[in-house]
Image (cartoon, rainbow over all chains, first blue to last red; front, side, top):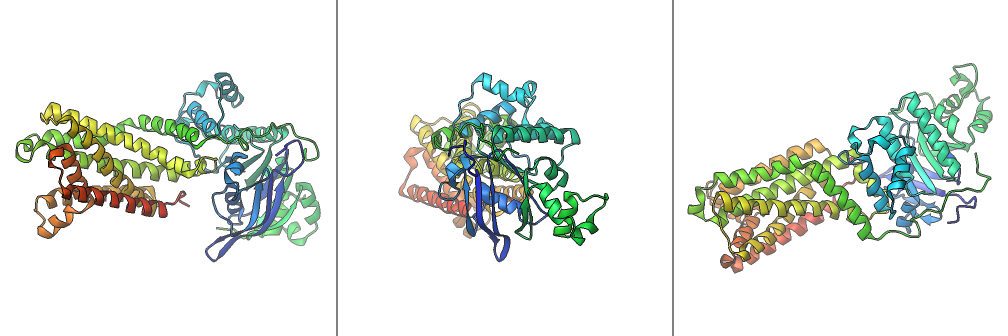
Length: 260
Length: 262
């Protein structure tokens, strides 16, 4: 795929995901463009993770098509997977391996030959040059997230998938991660991120999709979504600060009942 | 937002130039070997149990023969590697999401499994060689070169049974704590019924049943492998049954294996 065009790096069309009789995702369609941070937000059980898992190729959709950088993620699974970088929600590297070994493992899987200089640049970039020999299990949550993000982008994928990347981070680490995500966007990566934080979605996402009960309710820029729904009674009722925020719109559209 | 501007990202280095499965397997293998090395205390314990049994059974060498003593100890070691080592590590890594992280890469799933099984195969070879050495040094068990070579080969074949049995357990049970409990239970059940049953202490029926159980078959082929002159047509049948067990367990273990605990 020629990334010097504005063709979407991810195209999801008519996606359905079923678990037995339960339809977790219903007719979901959206796209992510190069140089864009696209947020998928929704309450617990709304269908975010199922949508993301289908894009990652971890679950088989019951209907719909997914194209990553032009590659069909079922028919050209290897090419599609090579065109995406993924940061999963939970820490997911062998705790016995050190940072250097993790970088070498994933570089090998993507067929990259990284010289000493390149590895030093990578470590320097995530400010872990002194911790290269530290085992993954010994790193702090913020350091683990940085390593995870570096691995997700080690092969310069057109699409980067981030599943709740700032969960559990302190405000400093969260801000730092936002800057890194924005830097990735500036380099041209298309980024699909899921989050529970409306502050995060409003701050860094160029466009967001609000998903609930497996269906997308709305897709647009955060400000347009606020402007479109600000006069709805349920949104006004959800307002707590005297001005309408994305969180108010989110609560107004998805309801205030706590989801399991 | 920069959706209307052209991007500067270099084209993905891999999508149109995927590495070979061999390259990916080499990277996975290096990582898995490193992980095994870092967990060497656990690996040592797995080898230590049959080694202690071998040393403590020195008095039995005269009575039941060196190859028989050695085969019992190798069988115990094979069970420990396949059931305790492989199952627990796989269950733990699955729970941590390590498999899922690897599955979102272009690495074929079979390379992930083959890499892990290769490491366990190496453990089987090391354990068998250690027992050969300890048997020679401590119990004065000396075999001819053909015995050592065939013994090593049948140990690998026998190890496959327990590795695949471990795969079935970890495939059927998602919770790593439950996997740990079940493999210990199966391990001790196999050892107890296997050893006492073979000696006829649990009755004729159990003795016959044990003969054709994974424990009995592996024990017999390893024993005959260590003393090739004792290899008979019956031993070949035990070898076939051993291979059958492996294929059955591999089928069931892969059929039901869940890559995620969710």
